[in-house]
Amino acid sequence: MVESLSSSRYVFFMISVCLFAALLYRPVLSRPAKFEDDFRITWSDGHITQIDGGRAIQLKLDPSSGCGFASKKQYLFGHVSMKIKLLPGDSAGTVAAFYMNSDTDSVRDELDFEFLGNRSGQPYTVQTNVFAHGKGDREQRVNLWFDPSRDFHEYAISWNHLRIVFYVDKVPIRVYKNNEARKVPYPRFQPMSIYSTLWEADDWATRGGIEKINWSGAPFYAYYKDFDIEGCPVPGPANCPANPMNWWEGSAYHTLSPAEARGYRWVRVNHMVYDYCTDKSRFHVPPPECSAGI
Image 1 (cartoon, rainbow, N blue to C red):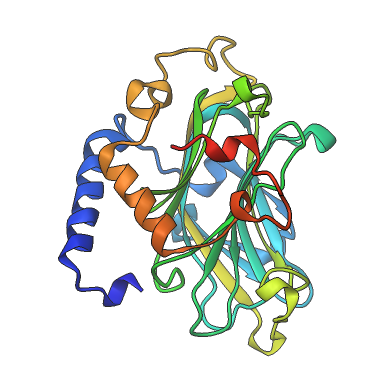
Image 2: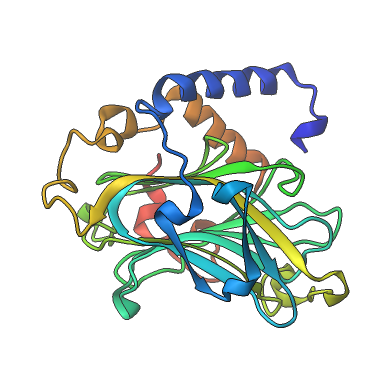
């Protein structure tokens, strides 16, 4: 766990990441919004409570229901982030998800963060996945290097014409590049909504479904705040998605910075627990995007 590390190399790495983030990660002012500015409840409104004047919300899971919310608009390219405080204690069998989805069924595009609950004392695992034109099966899993139930942490998805990056506290944990030249589908044509849900998934979420929900600990709560969406709304200005002047399309967002690349490699070496690219039981030949690098 990071909290117990005394390595000066790690401290230097985190300082480097933070300095880069201050200079480049947000070249424009962020716009944390109230929940109702950009989102609506989509599932079980009795299980979602606005707090702090609507600047934060509480999601509840109990034996009767989970719950969920979605953005009021769809977006084609941009950057979306929110801060989340996950379920504490014994959360095995639960999933809190933060994702984007085109809502187009068999040809859907989707970008997923799924936070897989754990038994007390075990690390929280975050699973990411990318669907493009209906094709998914691109799961990667990382054990978080901190306890995400003790405080809020920022989770973000950056999406432009060249790449998709998943960030945890501004550290990139996954890069999915546009490899259409290799005939690999890339989400480029369909706008997506932003969603979050809290739900029961004890048939697969924790140790492949071996660990079940302990309902004696219910209700379970997750908290969200600092909702920030910067992107091209659809419907909206027709020229926005193709505009190279959008900040998320700038040259600083074509590749990872040196500090980001160090953070990415650190996560992959020390905290990655599953990568579809190396799963020979599923793919005897790694999918072509797996050799693309960052």
